[in-house]
Image: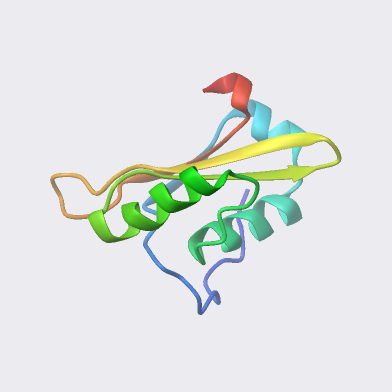
Length: 101
């Protein structure tokens, strides 16, 4: 599955390799996944509380882990981008359901 995310001008960080769990792929269609990853890259963390939002904003500066949450029709999608590793880059971003964490 591919996502059209190359034209996102509001990208705040690199994603690394993008992967998805089977549950995320079967629960959400490519349009929702593409829109969600675009929001994630732009720093729109979705349906998270104020404390987690602040942690994400700090993680942008400190190159720590980023976590977003988006909902569609009562279903929840998480997107997690790993912290910057020894290579100096973020290695992976994962689409998953909360039950798959």
